[in-house]
Length: 435
Image (cartoon, rainbow, N blue to C red; front, side, top):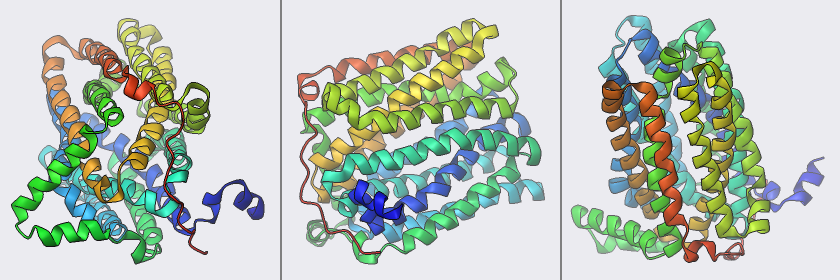
């Protein structure tokens, strides 16, 4: 069986990639527990207002702006595997603090916001390093397959995690359910530590830049310029990030109001919410598996646009869900099926495209610019959504946000992206690590 797997894909022979993959398996599952539990704690335990729920959601994404602006160069020049281990340990301490504070009677809304923002900052640095190290581990020729496999794992976690989270919340209460997530960060740190330190070291070009710019502020400004220029001078990536910005705005409306909409407007039980969200995990798994075949059938660029369009249509299912509350569950399931299927195709192909087109010494700073765009879009729209929800109501706000995603299709309809028919060629594949 193992020999069959090794022959079916070169990635099975990449010991270091398999360690990265092993680190992700339980961590992805645990993260779904916390993502589900924190809003439930805010809504059900702390009884927050829609505006406060929006603030809490915003504080989970705002750190991505700071990490993107000031952390891209830091990640570029850091040992990425050791940085990921450190961020796992930081997140373990922060997540375990929530049930501990609740048990001691110290948990309140400001503390929950502080912990959510701190976890967001650590996650932003971790994700940047994770995306930046992948081309070195597998080689650019195998990036689409590697990203598909990693996203498939995320999809399985999305399929099983929220349902398990809802059940754990019902049985143990939301704070204690987060203990499971905290322990998965220890698992992740263990496997990442086993990746040789040499694999995570910065490139010679990135190290040389740091020596040439000893002034900290001059270096920060230069890093921001490098990240922005890397994306903006590449027209396909420019189209992708512009379309993504509108998706993040729509997503901000979605995440800001989702739990309030489901728990208060529709009066769903946490377990039902978890199962419904898990449906999206199934469709995301299918999306991760069909991304590459779809790119071969439609063309690489058109497949990226198709994935985004599926996701936007999925978000539009929130409109009938808000209008026809007796049928809301049906339309919410359709939203999960279409939306997660499409966004997974879009993510696998667009992330792989960036990793293929950009040089390694610019990748972390370009990822930082992506995080600035996503963090700004999500944070601003979440805060606006919270205010809008208290003004026109939660259901109307959900419908408004769903319609915004359609605008994101327009910048993607450029010949620079649609004209990419074949998967871009990668550089020579590195020798796989033995193990």
